[in-house]
Length: 124
Image (tube, rainbow, N blue to C red; front, side):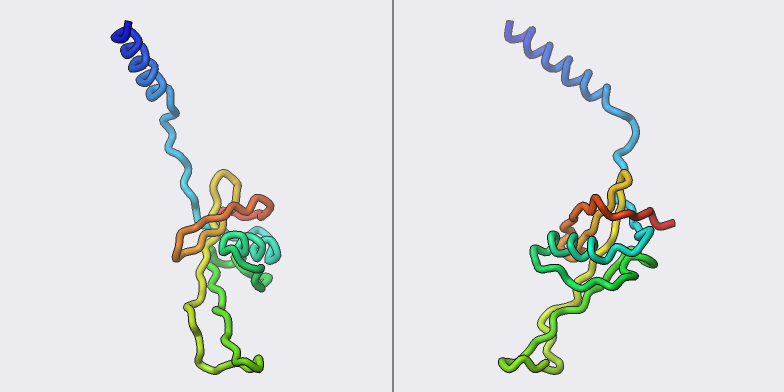
């Protein structure tokens, strides 16, 4: 009985493997926005980075699939900008698309966040 059950399970496994589609899974492609959507981009980056929304230019991701953000300026105890004090490198993000859904990816960590309300198209 155990041999028959094992044989049946093996047969079902092999049938399941052969029934899978032969088309490759679509990969994320570089993308650009079809219209300015800076607020949605800022919200997506905030979710991705677990931070408050950042200011994003209106033309972000319109001409290129990469966005570089300035690092935070360092202030002294009285709120004055300390010149030359950059504690971190600028953050870099890329806009991607897969199956008509846009994503933003942090280039250093490769963390990716879907942007379901954003409209973008693959880069030609």
